[in-house]
Amino acid sequence: MKNIYIETYGCQMNFADSEIVASLLKKEGYELVTEIAEADYVLINTCAIRDNAEQRIRKRLRELRAQQARHSQMRIGILGCMAERLQSQLMVEEENVSFVVGPDAYRRLPEILARVRQLGVKAAETELSTTETYDDIEPVRLGSNGISAYISIMRGCQNYCAYCVVPYTRGRERSRDPETIVAEARSLCEQGYKEVTLLGQNVNSYRWKCDGGEVGFAELMERVAEISPTMRVRFATSHPKDLSDRLLEVMSRHDNICKCIHLPVQSGSDRMLKLMNRHYDSAWYLDRIAAIRRYMPDCSITTDVIAGFCTETEEEHRMTLEMFSKVRYDYAYMFKFSMRPNTYAEKHLKDDVPDEVKTRRLEEIIALQGQIALENNRREVGKVYEVLVEGESHRSKERLFGRNSQNKVIVFDRHEVQPGMYVRVRVVDCTAATLLGELCTQ
Image 1: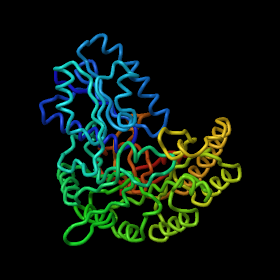
Image 2: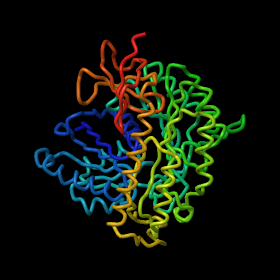
Image 3: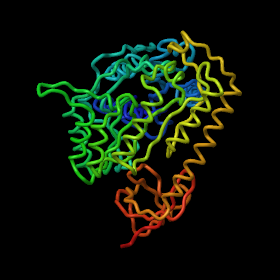
C-alpha cells in the first residue's frame, strides 16, 4: 500500500514543493505512479491565492469520489496553502479527505501516511516553521523534460500585502544556505539540464548571513551563473521595493542570466498601492523600470495586476491603464480582486466595487495588454535569437518551440533539431502570444 500519485495546482513554488514531497516519500520506500487508478495515496498540492483556485480543488475532490468507490483503500490528502489555510476544517467539509499537511510539515508525511493507514484516523499537520527550507533534500524532478528545473532558494513572505494570504499559509521569510543552492544547480548542470529558475515569493529579498558577511540575491545569481556559461539562469518573482541596481548590473554582465524580469505592479494608483501595502509608489516603480531599460535595453518585463481592489475609482483604474501604456509589458497576469479570508483587506477594508465593474475593468486591461503585446512582438520580426529548444509544438509534430533569453516562445520548423539544443532562429511573423521563426542554417 505504498503507491503515491501527486497532483499540483498553483504557482511554481507548489511544483517545487511537490518535488520535495516526492523525494521524501521515495526515501521511505513509496513508489510514484503516473496513473491515479494505481494510487493508494493521492496527494493534492493546493493553492489558496484566489477563491477560484480553491473551488477547483473542491471540484476535483468530488470527481475523485468515483476513484475511491473503485479503490476502497485509496486515501486522499491535501497539501500546501489550502491545507494551511483551512487545516482540520477541510476534513470536515470534504469527507473523502483523510489528511491535510501544510507547507512546512512535509518531513512528517511518512509518519502521517502510516498513522492514517494503520489506525484508520484522520490527521492534520499544519504548524508553520521559522527555519524549515528543505535545503538538504534533493528534489525528484516530476514530469521533467530534462532541460529546465526549478530551485527553491527561500520560503515564506513577510510583505503582508493587504490582499494576500501567502504570509499566513507559508509563514515568514527565510533563505536557504547559498552553498546548497549552488550545489543543486551544479548537480543539475552535470545531469545535462540547460536552464534553472531560482524561486521564492520575493527572490530579491534573499539574504544569507555567514562568517564572511552577507550573501544577497545579486551575489547568489552571480554564483549560479558562473557554474557554466551554457546553463541559463532565470528567477521569479521580484518585488519592486527590493529590485536593486546591483542585481541589474550582475544580470547585464552575464549572457546566461536571462533578460526577463517579472515585476508585479498591481495598480497604477498611489492610493491603491498604499492601501494594498505594497511599499512603493508609482514613481518608484517607474524608476525601477527605467533602471532595467538602462542596464538591459533588450530586457523583457512582465507583471501582475489586480482590477477592482477595494474602493478603486474609475480614475484609479485609468491610472493602471496609463501605467500599462508607459511600461509596455510583454506579458501580464491579470485578475479581478477576490477577497481572501484572514487578510488585512478582509478584516479592515470593504469589497465595494461591483463584480460587473471589476469584470469590465479587467476586460479593458486585457484588451490593452493584448494590443501592446502584439505591437511589441511585431518589433521582433527580423531579429535573430538564440533559442533553447523545449519540445514539439502543440499544433504540429513538424514544428518545435523554445524560448529566447526574454522568455518569449518561438515556434519554428524542426529540421534535425532536438529538444535541449541551442539554435539560432530568425523571427518572421508573430501573434500577440507567440513569435514565429525560421531556423538559421549558417
